[in-house]
Image 1 (spheres, rainbow, N blue to C red):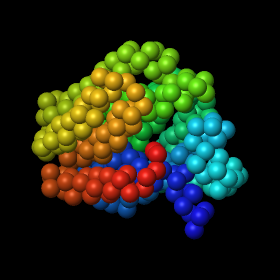
Image 2 (spheres, rainbow, N blue to C red):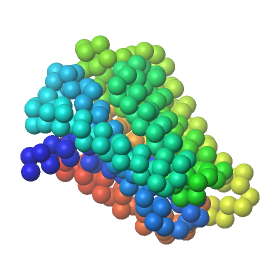
Image 3 (cartoon, rainbow, N blue to C red):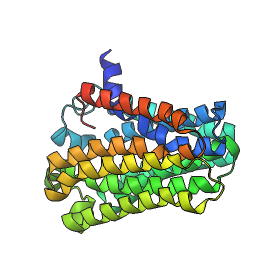
Length: 308
């Protein structure tokens, strides 16, 4: 049981909904709103690939964590580095295999996503703006992955989802680096706020987030065939979640407000990432998908007591 608990901590299980909501738009748009077995397969592969990336993150940063987060599974010796590296590598390999079994394009993209995850965890995470750009690109590409799994092609609406998701996650990544800014500075880890300066980094995060909402709303005006325009409700809710929880950080850029912004961004992601599924399904169906994921995430964040 102790090993199971340690692995749950490694994968950051309260964040399980993030890869799901990032993959859903591409998968459901490509399936024209139908919940097929390919949609389910895309979600499972994305979720396990995301978990593997979280494990690799702790593997590559175990020495830093020994100083800043000694209670985590690797620095506390509840798991050995090999016990983290081996299952993460196996999961990655299985994700690639499953991708190719579905179709060649999906398999190739899974390989690309694994490469992005590896580059971020091993190199770019501590390289300032490079890290802030790399991880959001991978999250945004999950939309494309979902579409490729389902249909082998990428409908135009999915590219809106890709752009909006990538930009929103860019803003999120920059703002949430503030939660560890003192520890990162002490350890010589370069984050975007330290590389660009606090105010320029916050400005960049704001611009990226605003552009994300704009791109998400573009189909509302540009796509004449779009019949389900009620999806804009989710854009507005995501916007409110992001703005309300980031205001304290912009007023006082510190670790406490950075962690508050992180929680708000996760809630905003669950509301906003899948917004364009509402262009394919009714508002009632999108509510039945999004709200349970939001409820479970909030519950896990409140009960797990795990720093994410």
